[in-house]
Image (cartoon, rainbow, N blue to C red; front, side, top):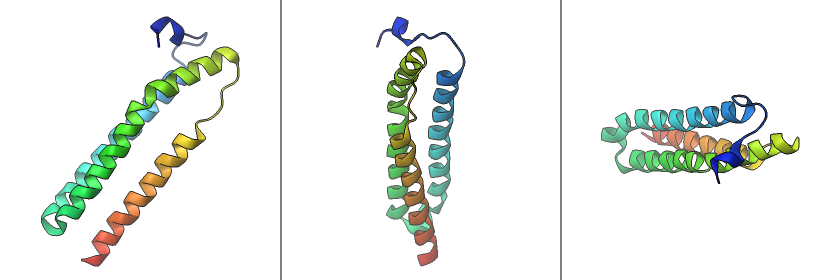
Length: 109
C-alpha cells in the first residue's frame, strides 16, 4: 500500500494510537514469554513450547498491524470504521490458552 494511500484528515489520532497499542501488546507478550524461560531448568521443553507459541502469537499480531492500519485509515476517510473483533478475540483466546497452559504446567510440578 502506498504511503499516500495511508493518509487521513486526523493525522496522529485514532489509527496511529491503535497501531502503537498493538505494538505494545506484541512487545509485552514477548516480555512475558521471556519471563517464562526462567522455568526452563525445572520444566524443560514445555517452557520452550510456551515461549514459541507466545512468540508466534506476538509475531502474528505484529505482522497484521500494517493491514489493520490501512483499514483504519480507509475507515476514517469513509467515516465507517468497523472494529477488529476477530483480531481482538483471537489474541484474547491465545493469551487465555497460554496462561492456562502455564498454570497447568506450574501446578503439575
